[in-house]
Length: 340
Image (cartoon, rainbow, N blue to C red; front, top):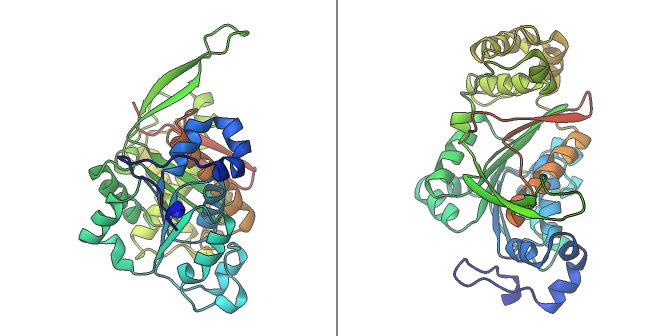
């Protein structure tokens, strides 16, 4: 149906009366203009696991224009615990094939396209795919894949999100290029409501990974829970030397610990706060990183969707730029990595 096809930047679609009725509460919350931006947005999501499941649910219900999901893998038994798009009888079938109708049922006003061919993310096919979307979200992928796709997005001026979980730990990274947004003027008088336009300049993941913690006080460093940040970075480095495989055995503890400690030293982290990775963190990562824990996926996926919608609406500042979640504490922190 024509009403399911999102507009383009040259010919944007207007919100219909029926859509205004469906999205009435949201329009009251963030305004018609913000809802209009969402209605005209095409979002690409790569990999359909637990984090993507939660994020997709939220952005589809919010009323984006079109969703494109790329995943070449089949449903495995371990997918059933963290993804409510899959059933027992779906094991062995393509993830995107079985999920498509269930995603569409969440909101018939959103167009859904699925791609199960891995070559869609390669060469000219990737360039063509990125050219037709407004934002990219890559989930549960290794560092090298994230860096490569982020670089491709930068070449085509496409905002980029990444998110995933490693057992009890999770992360979100965003590169929104040069992002303009409206936020309340904190300097205004208390009884005066005033908004101001702000601009945030983001960096690529490649650049963010070169971040140094030099000059931060003990308190500043401690507030960012650096052990979790470097646990995530250690997992990425581990994958890079193990053909993309995640640690799944206590025997990986020593290697992960050595990697994390090397990264901590290279980043010049305040030694009074973190001189080495805590043993309990490494032990947890070594045994749980390859497993999806449904509540952690729900938290990280929900926050990922919230930030995507915030970026689309251009209201309030999005994550800047690396969020980590610690399921042991039930909280998260944001590190400003290499951003000006």
